Length: 112
Length: 236
Image (cartoon, rainbow over the protein chains, first blue to last red):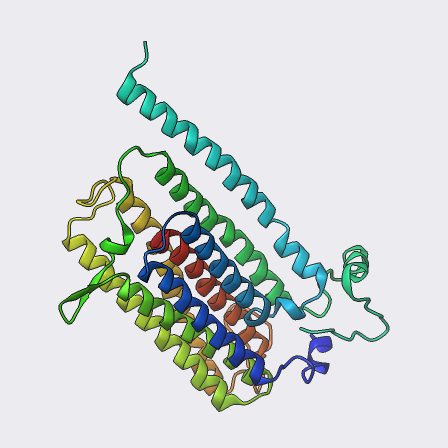
């Protein structure tokens, strides 16, 4: 890896960026804990949980795992497969609803 | 990591660069150590494993007609006689984020060839991970005492236990493996293996601080998975 060795100066970043991200992660974790503390319910709870979760995940991946500074060839190879997971989630939401419907129908109403 | 310069080759930025990197007859990931690329591929496959667990948990929870246990009450802990919701989980989250931060700094000091700082920070990360595993063992034994089993629990839907033990157990296994490697790498940093290029086991690769970054990727991934478990299992 001669190529990477030559560029060791350009591979480190100022300590400030790490401390900022670190602090932000603490604050965001505190906020997501507050969602439970104040017992927000319903759509507000779910959207806040997802918002803080994706923000934290994005910060960790972009700065702690250095994806923000990587070349697109690597970033895209890593991020596009996530769409497959999103499809899987969508399929299983539909399937879960159907299973619940069948259970309620056959357990409590009874099929003829 | 950022904008590698390879002699005799001009690297274009952005999507154009991606197209030419992918189409080039040399390595596809320019300036990325092969170990790092392999760690990323492994983490990608691990992402799919954890996604399957979390998706199956979502499907199980969505499809049961029985009331799901309220995690806010199940995981409450008594502090000075008052039940505080998710107290232990919140502390575990903060411990894991702290260790993630020390790891990020260890990578930075490693690349600056600051052996002492790098070693102490890797050691601090290992101790944070150890604390996390300890608290998780406490949480497990508490729930097992309360009668939570993979097939039943006193709080509600019986599936709760099996998802809880499977997901947090698999994550805890990752943390434990990470802690073992962190201790080994802390030793290797202090011993100067990355300064004098000492070869590791099973490899002819010379020791280099890029190995700390590779280890860091794994550790940040463990933290990343916890972000999702915290959101979906404990808060939802």
